[in-house]
Image (cartoon, rainbow, N blue to C red; front, side, top):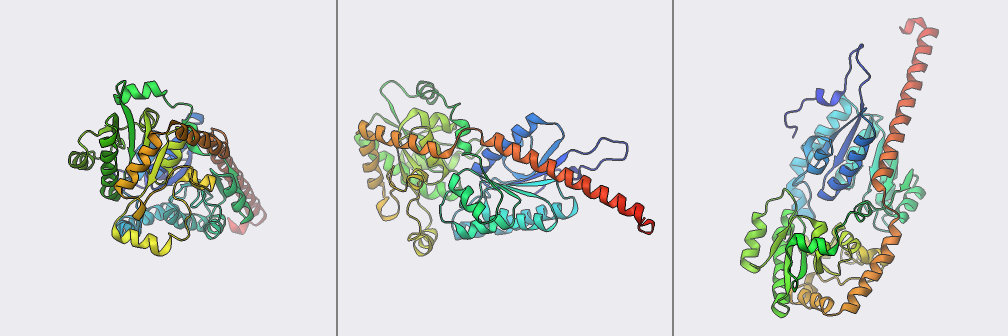
Amino acid sequence: GVRGLSMSDFSGAAGPDLAPPPYRVLFSVGDPSGDVHAARVAAELKRRRSDIYLFGFGGPRMASAGVVLSHDNRGCSAIGVLESLRLVPRMHRILAALRQILHTTPPDLVVLVDYGVFNLRLAVTAKSVGVPVLYYIPPGCWARDMLRVTERVARWTDHVATPFPWSAGLLTRAGAHATFVGHPLLDGVESQPSREEARHRVGLGGDERGLAILPGSRGHEIRHILPLMLRAAALARGQRPELVPLVSHAPGSDRVPLQRAASKLLPEARFVESTADLLRASDVGLVKSGTITLEAALAGLPMVVTYAASPVAALQWHLHAARRVKYIAIPNILADREVVPERYGAQGRPPDLAREVLALYDDPARREAVRSDYAGLAAQLGQPGASRAVADLVEAMLDQAQRARTAGNARSRQASVADPWRR
């Protein structure tokens, strides 16, 4: 909920003798990756201008970039029916609070980032009260056939900034104003450390080789995916003792569950907070499906992709999604073929994963072929600068809203002069 804040903090009201209030932009960002991308946009906006007030639903990186959080998004991300149901009461309260802000002190602009089920509902409210909506990274934009979601996004937004070129085409055909801005992960590629720097920072010695383990940061991922990966890494390390398991640990998250699992299954594991260092220092990786697979590809890490969930979530997958989803790793989705091995479910047990990891690790030519494929995929994602492009759109939409208000006020004054009884 709102911690130490009142509605007046979001009103931006100014007295008659004060300077005009700053533009007010409401962000709604529900997951950790969206927090990173929104923070970059917020930092760019804050760098450019002082007459802007950013607030709303988001995470710690957004707060560090100058966004005043009305609601913290930590723990708000889930996959699967059962995990999502546990969040329903909390998400209902947050949505109701954001809707109240839209009705009582409407901002100048709403910026939505990913988190489709929640954010599309907020977009409907924003449009109903006349607040323009910019959607950054719309739901399903990675897929080439998400027509139903695309039509809903087009209906309830004023502009869409998408990281994939085919998504911009689908949205435009559905009636949206859409801009292909490039993928935001490209913004971090230029600042990646060298392999030598990364190896030094994670503590790898001369003969040691890194095995990256990236299970995700959600609670159910730590419970289900991390043990699977640790067991597979233990098997691989049993055959290649030089492999050092490097486990991703999200900054600010609780390390205790990770340490508890590692102490039982793989005591040699080391924990690394910097994802960039982890990816660049490692020779091969075990990576859970999702955006992190694209980040790993841009860092040049050969990997094996997997996923695991509760029995209920697994049943849901087999009943509703397994036949419709061809690939789960974004590099494979982009290429429409298996660039990196995907092993999950009955084909993703620890021995299967260990076997695939060693097949990559033991074959330098295969690793180079994977990296070559990565380079071709990166070319599909545009150029760095997505955060700047989205900031450009925010400014343009704020200026357009200001012109519309000025024109509306002028018409009201003219009508009052023409008809004195309206005064």
